[in-house]
Length: 300
Image 1 (tube, rainbow, N blue to C red):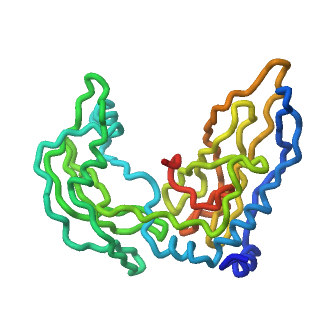
Image 2: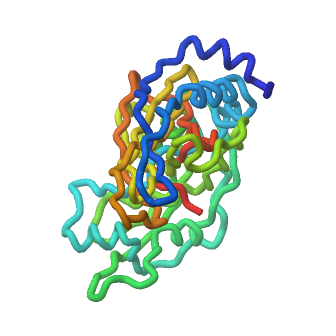
Image 3: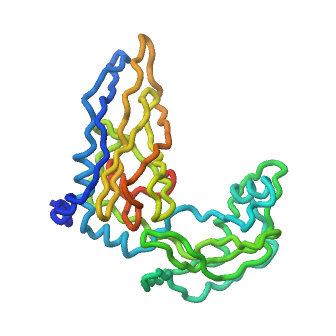
Protein backbone atom coordinates (compact mmCIF):
# COMPACT_ATOMS: atom_id res chain seq x y z
CA UNK A 1 0.00 0.00 0.00
CA UNK A 2 1.35 3.43 -0.94
CA UNK A 3 2.18 6.07 1.64
CA UNK A 4 -0.91 8.00 2.60
CA UNK A 5 -3.30 5.39 1.22
CA UNK A 6 -4.41 4.09 4.63
CA UNK A 7 -5.07 7.59 5.91
CA UNK A 8 -6.75 8.47 2.65
CA UNK A 9 -9.15 5.53 2.92
CA UNK A 10 -10.55 6.98 6.12
CA UNK A 11 -10.84 10.38 4.50
CA UNK A 12 -12.98 8.89 1.75
CA UNK A 13 -15.89 8.87 4.18
CA UNK A 14 -16.25 12.57 3.41
CA UNK A 15 -16.27 12.16 -0.36
CA UNK A 16 -19.25 13.08 -2.49
CA UNK A 17 -19.55 11.41 -5.89
CA UNK A 18 -21.57 12.27 -8.95
CA UNK A 19 -21.13 9.37 -11.36
CA UNK A 20 -23.56 7.96 -13.89
CA UNK A 21 -23.06 4.58 -15.49
CA UNK A 22 -23.62 4.35 -19.21
CA UNK A 23 -22.91 1.73 -21.83
CA UNK A 24 -19.64 2.07 -23.67
CA UNK A 25 -19.10 1.36 -27.31
CA UNK A 26 -16.46 -0.84 -28.95
CA UNK A 27 -15.71 -1.59 -32.59
CA UNK A 28 -15.62 -5.02 -34.14
CA UNK A 29 -12.86 -6.03 -36.58
CA UNK A 30 -15.35 -5.54 -39.40
CA UNK A 31 -15.82 -1.91 -38.43
CA UNK A 32 -19.28 -2.21 -36.88
CA UNK A 33 -19.82 -0.77 -33.41
CA UNK A 34 -21.00 -2.98 -30.62
CA UNK A 35 -22.11 -2.28 -27.06
CA UNK A 36 -19.50 -2.71 -24.33
CA UNK A 37 -19.89 -3.17 -20.60
CA UNK A 38 -21.00 -0.11 -18.59
CA UNK A 39 -18.14 2.14 -17.50
CA UNK A 40 -17.83 2.55 -13.72
CA UNK A 41 -15.28 5.25 -12.89
CA UNK A 42 -15.99 5.27 -9.16
CA UNK A 43 -13.43 2.59 -8.08
CA UNK A 44 -10.58 4.34 -9.91
CA UNK A 45 -11.56 7.75 -8.52
CA UNK A 46 -11.62 6.32 -4.99
CA UNK A 47 -8.16 4.79 -5.39
CA UNK A 48 -6.76 8.08 -6.72
CA UNK A 49 -8.33 10.09 -3.88
CA UNK A 50 -7.05 7.62 -1.28
CA UNK A 51 -3.51 7.81 -2.69
CA UNK A 52 -3.49 11.62 -2.56
CA UNK A 53 -5.06 12.14 0.85
CA UNK A 54 -2.28 12.64 3.41
CA UNK A 55 0.49 12.12 0.82
CA UNK A 56 3.79 13.98 0.42
CA UNK A 57 2.51 15.13 -2.99
CA UNK A 58 -0.47 16.80 -1.33
CA UNK A 59 1.82 18.58 1.15
CA UNK A 60 3.95 19.79 -1.77
CA UNK A 61 0.81 21.22 -3.38
CA UNK A 62 -0.29 22.96 -0.19
CA UNK A 63 3.11 24.44 0.61
CA UNK A 64 4.15 25.50 -2.91
CA UNK A 65 3.32 28.32 -5.30
CA UNK A 66 0.75 27.25 -7.88
CA UNK A 67 -1.18 30.13 -9.54
CA UNK A 68 -4.72 29.45 -10.72
CA UNK A 69 -5.83 30.88 -14.05
CA UNK A 70 -4.09 32.79 -16.79
CA UNK A 71 -2.43 36.18 -16.26
CA UNK A 72 -5.00 38.09 -18.28
CA UNK A 73 -4.71 41.85 -18.69
CA UNK A 74 -7.94 43.72 -18.00
CA UNK A 75 -7.41 47.48 -18.47
CA UNK A 76 -9.65 49.76 -16.42
CA UNK A 77 -12.51 50.78 -18.68
CA UNK A 78 -11.73 48.03 -21.18
CA UNK A 79 -9.77 48.12 -24.42
CA UNK A 80 -9.98 51.19 -26.65
CA UNK A 81 -10.68 49.05 -29.70
CA UNK A 82 -11.01 45.50 -30.94
CA UNK A 83 -7.64 45.95 -32.61
CA UNK A 84 -5.97 46.68 -29.26
CA UNK A 85 -7.64 43.65 -27.67
CA UNK A 86 -6.49 41.41 -30.53
CA UNK A 87 -2.92 42.68 -30.18
CA UNK A 88 -2.96 41.98 -26.43
CA UNK A 89 -4.41 38.49 -26.87
CA UNK A 90 -1.94 37.66 -29.65
CA UNK A 91 1.02 39.03 -27.71
CA UNK A 92 1.84 41.72 -30.27
CA UNK A 93 3.86 44.43 -28.45
CA UNK A 94 6.70 46.77 -29.29
CA UNK A 95 9.22 47.94 -26.68
CA UNK A 96 9.78 51.70 -26.58
CA UNK A 97 11.79 51.83 -23.37
CA UNK A 98 14.83 50.19 -21.80
CA UNK A 99 14.29 47.12 -19.64
CA UNK A 100 16.09 47.00 -16.27
CA UNK A 101 19.14 44.74 -16.49
CA UNK A 102 19.44 43.94 -12.78
CA UNK A 103 17.38 41.36 -10.92
CA UNK A 104 14.75 42.86 -8.62
CA UNK A 105 15.19 42.96 -4.83
CA UNK A 106 14.28 39.78 -2.93
CA UNK A 107 10.52 39.86 -2.42
CA UNK A 108 8.53 36.95 -0.98
CA UNK A 109 5.06 35.78 -1.95
CA UNK A 110 2.62 36.76 0.82
CA UNK A 111 -0.70 35.17 1.77
CA UNK A 112 -3.39 36.84 3.92
CA UNK A 113 -2.89 34.27 6.71
CA UNK A 114 0.68 35.48 7.18
CA UNK A 115 2.32 32.72 5.16
CA UNK A 116 5.32 33.68 3.03
CA UNK A 117 7.43 31.90 0.42
CA UNK A 118 10.67 33.19 -1.12
CA UNK A 119 11.54 31.90 -4.61
CA UNK A 120 14.08 33.00 -7.27
CA UNK A 121 12.87 36.00 -9.26
CA UNK A 122 12.71 36.61 -13.01
CA UNK A 123 14.40 39.55 -14.68
CA UNK A 124 12.46 42.13 -16.67
CA UNK A 125 13.73 40.76 -19.99
CA UNK A 126 12.33 37.29 -19.36
CA UNK A 127 9.04 38.70 -18.07
CA UNK A 128 8.70 40.91 -21.17
CA UNK A 129 9.28 37.85 -23.34
CA UNK A 130 6.13 36.35 -21.82
CA UNK A 131 3.93 39.16 -23.15
CA UNK A 132 5.66 39.88 -26.48
CA UNK A 133 4.92 36.49 -28.04
CA UNK A 134 3.80 37.33 -31.59
CA UNK A 135 6.13 35.62 -34.06
CA UNK A 136 4.19 36.50 -37.20
CA UNK A 137 1.55 39.17 -36.45
CA UNK A 138 -1.52 39.31 -38.66
CA UNK A 139 -1.07 41.61 -41.61
CA UNK A 140 -1.79 45.22 -40.69
CA UNK A 141 -2.24 44.51 -36.97
CA UNK A 142 -0.86 47.43 -34.96
CA UNK A 143 1.23 46.44 -31.93
CA UNK A 144 0.71 47.89 -28.47
CA UNK A 145 3.60 50.06 -27.24
CA UNK A 146 5.29 49.38 -23.89
CA UNK A 147 6.62 52.76 -22.72
CA UNK A 148 7.84 52.01 -19.18
CA UNK A 149 8.48 49.15 -16.77
CA UNK A 150 8.85 48.95 -13.01
CA UNK A 151 9.05 46.27 -10.35
CA UNK A 152 6.12 45.90 -7.96
CA UNK A 153 3.48 43.42 -6.85
CA UNK A 154 0.18 42.00 -8.09
CA UNK A 155 -2.54 39.86 -6.53
CA UNK A 156 -3.26 36.43 -8.01
CA UNK A 157 -5.37 33.41 -6.99
CA UNK A 158 -3.24 30.43 -5.99
CA UNK A 159 -3.74 26.93 -4.61
CA UNK A 160 -3.40 28.50 -1.13
CA UNK A 161 -5.78 31.41 -1.75
CA UNK A 162 -5.14 34.89 -3.10
CA UNK A 163 -1.58 36.10 -2.67
CA UNK A 164 0.52 39.22 -3.16
CA UNK A 165 3.18 38.21 -5.65
CA UNK A 166 6.26 40.11 -6.94
CA UNK A 167 5.68 41.22 -10.51
CA UNK A 168 6.98 43.34 -13.37
CA UNK A 169 4.50 46.07 -14.29
CA UNK A 170 4.55 47.22 -17.92
CA UNK A 171 3.02 50.57 -18.88
CA UNK A 172 1.15 50.31 -22.19
CA UNK A 173 0.62 53.48 -24.19
CA UNK A 174 -2.95 54.73 -23.91
CA UNK A 175 -3.83 52.77 -20.76
CA UNK A 176 -3.68 53.62 -17.05
CA UNK A 177 -3.73 49.99 -15.89
CA UNK A 178 -0.27 48.40 -16.14
CA UNK A 179 0.13 44.94 -17.62
CA UNK A 180 1.45 42.75 -14.78
CA UNK A 181 3.54 39.64 -15.19
CA UNK A 182 4.47 37.50 -12.19
CA UNK A 183 8.21 37.72 -11.55
CA UNK A 184 8.37 34.11 -10.35
CA UNK A 185 8.14 30.84 -12.23
CA UNK A 186 5.30 28.62 -11.08
CA UNK A 187 6.63 25.50 -9.38
CA UNK A 188 6.32 22.08 -10.95
CA UNK A 189 3.13 20.25 -10.08
CA UNK A 190 3.75 17.36 -7.67
CA UNK A 191 4.30 13.87 -9.10
CA UNK A 192 1.25 11.62 -8.63
CA UNK A 193 1.41 9.10 -5.76
CA UNK A 194 -0.37 6.49 -7.90
CA UNK A 195 0.41 4.79 -11.22
CA UNK A 196 -1.47 6.04 -14.31
CA UNK A 197 -4.31 3.99 -15.68
CA UNK A 198 -3.39 4.52 -19.34
CA UNK A 199 -5.11 6.54 -22.05
CA UNK A 200 -8.57 5.22 -22.96
CA UNK A 201 -8.17 2.26 -20.60
CA UNK A 202 -11.48 0.82 -19.43
CA UNK A 203 -13.45 3.38 -21.41
CA UNK A 204 -11.87 6.41 -19.75
CA UNK A 205 -11.09 9.62 -21.64
CA UNK A 206 -7.91 11.71 -21.30
CA UNK A 207 -8.39 15.12 -19.66
CA UNK A 208 -6.08 18.00 -20.59
CA UNK A 209 -7.05 20.94 -18.41
CA UNK A 210 -9.76 22.82 -16.54
CA UNK A 211 -10.97 26.42 -16.41
CA UNK A 212 -11.49 26.86 -12.65
CA UNK A 213 -9.59 30.14 -12.38
CA UNK A 214 -10.33 30.99 -8.76
CA UNK A 215 -10.81 29.21 -5.41
CA UNK A 216 -14.45 30.38 -5.43
CA UNK A 217 -15.29 28.43 -8.59
CA UNK A 218 -18.06 25.85 -8.32
CA UNK A 219 -18.73 25.50 -12.06
CA UNK A 220 -16.08 25.26 -14.76
CA UNK A 221 -15.18 23.37 -17.92
CA UNK A 222 -12.84 20.45 -18.47
CA UNK A 223 -11.11 19.73 -21.79
CA UNK A 224 -11.41 16.05 -22.72
CA UNK A 225 -10.29 13.91 -25.65
CA UNK A 226 -12.18 11.19 -27.54
CA UNK A 227 -12.18 9.27 -30.80
CA UNK A 228 -13.95 10.30 -34.00
CA UNK A 229 -16.73 7.72 -33.69
CA UNK A 230 -17.29 8.05 -29.95
CA UNK A 231 -20.37 9.83 -28.63
CA UNK A 232 -18.29 12.38 -26.76
CA UNK A 233 -17.22 12.50 -23.12
CA UNK A 234 -18.90 12.84 -19.75
CA UNK A 235 -16.90 13.84 -16.68
CA UNK A 236 -17.61 12.21 -13.31
CA UNK A 237 -16.64 13.97 -10.08
CA UNK A 238 -15.51 12.71 -6.69
CA UNK A 239 -15.14 15.47 -4.11
CA UNK A 240 -13.09 15.09 -0.96
CA UNK A 241 -11.76 17.30 1.82
CA UNK A 242 -8.48 17.97 0.00
CA UNK A 243 -9.12 16.67 -3.53
CA UNK A 244 -11.46 16.95 -6.49
CA UNK A 245 -11.00 13.88 -8.69
CA UNK A 246 -12.33 14.06 -12.26
CA UNK A 247 -12.81 11.03 -14.50
CA UNK A 248 -13.46 11.38 -18.23
CA UNK A 249 -15.83 8.71 -19.49
CA UNK A 250 -16.26 7.84 -23.19
CA UNK A 251 -19.90 7.87 -24.31
CA UNK A 252 -21.25 5.38 -26.84
CA UNK A 253 -21.07 6.45 -30.46
CA UNK A 254 -23.11 5.64 -33.50
CA UNK A 255 -23.13 2.17 -35.02
CA UNK A 256 -21.00 2.04 -38.14
CA UNK A 257 -22.46 0.84 -41.41
CA UNK A 258 -20.85 -1.62 -43.81
CA UNK A 259 -17.60 -0.23 -45.18
CA UNK A 260 -17.50 2.66 -42.68
CA UNK A 261 -14.45 3.21 -40.49
CA UNK A 262 -13.22 5.69 -37.91
CA UNK A 263 -10.13 7.83 -38.42
CA UNK A 264 -7.41 7.96 -35.77
CA UNK A 265 -7.79 11.67 -34.96
CA UNK A 266 -8.12 12.71 -31.33
CA UNK A 267 -11.07 15.05 -30.89
CA UNK A 268 -11.40 17.54 -28.04
CA UNK A 269 -14.45 18.93 -26.32
CA UNK A 270 -15.22 21.13 -23.32
CA UNK A 271 -17.35 19.40 -20.69
CA UNK A 272 -19.12 21.42 -17.96
CA UNK A 273 -18.51 20.36 -14.36
CA UNK A 274 -20.39 21.50 -11.25
CA UNK A 275 -19.17 20.95 -7.68
CA UNK A 276 -21.19 20.86 -4.48
CA UNK A 277 -18.94 23.57 -2.99
CA UNK A 278 -16.12 25.86 -4.19
CA UNK A 279 -12.80 24.34 -5.25
CA UNK A 280 -11.06 26.26 -2.47
CA UNK A 281 -7.57 24.97 -1.70
CA UNK A 282 -8.38 21.48 -2.97
CA UNK A 283 -6.26 19.99 -5.74
CA UNK A 284 -8.01 18.98 -8.99
CA UNK A 285 -6.81 15.56 -10.19
CA UNK A 286 -7.28 13.56 -13.39
CA UNK A 287 -8.35 10.03 -12.43
CA UNK A 288 -6.83 8.46 -15.54
CA UNK A 289 -3.29 9.75 -14.98
CA UNK A 290 -3.56 10.24 -11.22
CA UNK A 291 -1.82 13.60 -11.75
CA UNK A 292 -2.87 17.18 -10.97
CA UNK A 293 -4.97 18.68 -13.74
CA UNK A 294 -3.62 22.09 -14.73
CA UNK A 295 -5.26 25.20 -16.16
CA UNK A 296 -6.32 24.98 -19.80
CA UNK A 297 -5.12 22.29 -22.23
CA UNK A 298 -2.01 20.49 -20.99
CA UNK A 299 1.09 21.61 -22.87
CA UNK A 300 3.87 19.35 -24.04
